[in-house]
Length: 325
Ligand code: BDR
Ligand code: CA
Image (cartoon, rainbow, N blue to C red):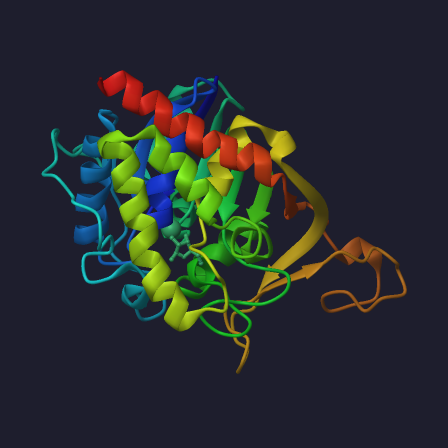
């Protein structure tokens, strides 16, 4: 079983990440931590509790950072609506919030488990993860890996260059990419261009029937309307679930090593993840020509095994639906 902490800002696609984490027999979901991102910390935390209630699970949910480290807060209301998860019915929470701050929850959980057994899965802005790494740097060697939704090596979604999770807290992303732990960047190249809720997938989820199936279909119906007006994609993107899927079954992705830097100052490019895949020493790498100055540590997700990913979503819906019956 892979132990994970899911750090999220639900958020429609965050809810599908929670679905996979809750249902998979390969995942031990140690807790969910929330971070301001798609909406305010109040809303995304309430949404996280409601989503767990829909799925019939009780796990620690710890509320985290109210905003980014340095910049003004940006939210994604134009995609996720005024609650951060508009569309589906959100029931009142069936259990209480964990009393700890998310940053302390992350540190205590990582330190209480055996080294290299806990993976962090940030799928909102990386504020909590950066704060935890700064507050208790021993977690950097202790976590197994960080599997993060964010960035892109091609194009952005909130600006031409930047993806939302990075743009919303670029300094936190810089800390996470440069910390020295094992990081996998699952960016828009994969999540927005290969992981879409196609009509076929929606039909398969519909065939499961029941409240959980309806909840998922309602999330997709809502983001389909908002995506359609803002992005050139035909169906809703299931960004965040790709990270959990990659932990459940690493063969679902192909990755390439790259040196990823976060643009903190660009006039047009702030929040861009600049990925250097080139190792030839003649290239002018970041600030120099010597290959020693590069750091090909980040696993950058390139392609998705769509059939396996779609199967996981359908199976997870079925598993939780059967468990509630
Ligand atoms: C990311 O931004 C959010 O809107 C989604 O939940 C996802 O984590 C995609 O850019
Ligand atoms: Ca998210």
